[in-house]
Length: 274
Image (cartoon, one colour):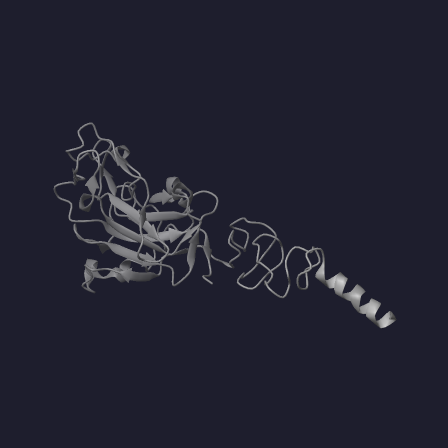
């Protein structure tokens, strides 16, 4: 009799209120039927998490998706470069070997040239670029100032992807008074890269903060503008290869333009891919 009652009490303690299988301490989930769910930011590292520091912030060593963060870095992987010749300005390694800007009124010679119909896809050796505070990406292209307020530009459409197949473009808008004609005023090319001269230089001006476009030049982009937490790839292509929705025609270009010259792309917040 005592043995029967003891087994009954033990069975009751395990089945909980629904008469089902063994329950977790909060009597909500059968422990035998479901694994513990990983919740990023709860301070407990679970399978599938590289880290968990108790918050969902980027920039503190553990990303908002609980991946171990890597140091900020320039893109170091050429994923696709259909224009590549392997020589001179046709060598795509020039876009991943460091940024060497020529300053406000000069061009760099350490660049990779994209043709008017081409593109360039760069990555970070499998790491993910994370959305964090402020600018996440800076694109360095070979723009330079001349004359009275004019800028020689090869405007660039910047797209990003997590899988290399689905691409999302950062918002861009050409706002010149006559959108059928090319404008050499950088302010007319909102949201494009290739508008701002490159001041940062790996050897000569390395003290500049490359993630501050006002200090180091280049054009900054924030993944928050796209509602994306992270990406793996950046695709750069000439604006003139895209259609201006306001006119239904390709964006205009400088008559002497032969395509963007890419010096590099820097990512501020990186995380090791799972």
